[in-house]
Every structure is written in C-alpha cells, then in structure tokens.
Image (cartoon, rainbow, N blue to C red):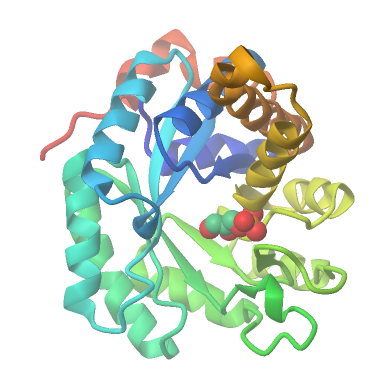
Length: 303
Ligand code: 13P
C-alpha cells in the first residue's frame, strides 16, 4: 500500500524509531525488500537512485505496482535526485519523470551547492512536489564518500542553526543530515557526532531526520541514532555485500545454477530484515494500517 514518506516518518518520529530505505536496482531486489517488510510487518521506504537503471520510469512504475499490491505501508523515494547537475533545469528534468512514474517522494539533493542555492532550488522543487501530493527530502551539509573517510575531504557536517532556517525556508518534509556517516565502504572507523545530532533535533523542533551511508556504520551507532531522532536510514552497500557473500558460498554447480536469483533474493531480504530489527521498526505496520486512518493516508495521484 502506497504512502508518502512524510506519512511514514510522522509515526517513526513520534515513536522514536527509524525506517530503513534500501537502494533497489531491479525487479528482483524490489521484490526482496518488500518480502522483508512483509515478513517483519514493517513500514518500508524504497530508495531508487537515477543512474542505476537505464529506464527509471519503467523501474518506478513496476516498483509502484509491487508496493500497491503489498499490504505493508511503503513509500517510493527518488534517491539523490539531481545531485549530478549544478543546473536547476537539469535537476528538474531528472525529478519530473519520477513524479510521473508514481514515486511518492523525491530527494532533491543540492548539498554540493552553496547554502543559498541549495535553499532556492529545494524551495522551487518542493512547491512542485507538494502540488502533486508527494514528499520532499533534502540534504544540508554533505555526506561524503567512504573511500575518502580517512581525510574526510568531501564531508561537511550539518550546522544545527542552519538546519532550522533551511527547513523554514524550503518547506521540506524531512532533512538528511551529515553527522559523520559516509556512502559506501569506510576507509577508517566511522565516528558519529551524537552531540550534533541532539542539537539538530532540538534546533529543528523535533523534525524528521535522515541518515545516509548506513552501511558499515556499526550496529551500536545505528541503534543509538535511530533512538535519538534519525527516522530514515539509507542502506545500499551492505545489501550488495550480503548477496555477494551468499553467491560466493552457495553451492551453485550444475543444475543448481538456476538457483542463483533465489540466493540473491534471499540474502538481500535477510540482510534487510536485520536492519528492520536494528532500527526498531519491526511490527510497526499495523499502526499505519489502522482501519480509520487508511482512507486518509492513501494517496491519489494528480499526475
Ligand atoms: P550505503 O551504500 O553506504 O549504505 O549508502 C546508501 C545511501 O546512503 C544511499 O543514499
């Protein structure tokens, strides 16, 4: 059942847990993450990034159909929308097809640009997305690349005061913050600035917050972050690693070669189940699906 990300994060924020946002690549991984949510009776945010598929509209429409057929509350989010382009028009060109494909949320990632441009681009995009009835995530500060974690040359930590004004000026529904995580594999040991997280949560009056670069961050860090105000955690690399490991160790000789997709499906699903438990959202689906709220929460697209 489709929900916007705002709807999903509202309850997570009120009850102090986080929802995992696995990056999917294709039909197989879309089915695997929905299977994990169904097994755990959990809400789910499916993240789809632009460059991972030759036809994101096709992938979005297919994922939307699978999500609609599932009894779990699911949002479909464009991950890092427009981040490759400094130009606003190119960013818009990337985001609009996803809105048409039925994504229920978009991330407008202008975090590489100066504060003022980040604000003005996100503000314009939020106006469009909200008119279509979908949610917006943006990023302030910049979550860098794990490969550069030893010198942190591409990481900019989020300033709590700026976070407050950014939210007020742009009207976004949730904010990705930079508190020490990085995308991909860490070169070095991840250190999370929980003091900063606490200050951001307070300065923003308890606004829904997002953590990128979940993989390799460590269970203790993630458990703590999800109880301290992080409400969505993005995860990609750890899912790939689990499947790579499973394929490497599976007995796929001879006729068993046909089992390869099942091995990938099951390992992707089981790794996500670990994240659902870790972030505290196992068994939370019924709260979203309470009979009296279903009609109010269902989305009717204008596009
Ligand atoms: P990881 O691959 O490090 O989990 O990061 C995923 C992510 O943040 C996608 O936006």
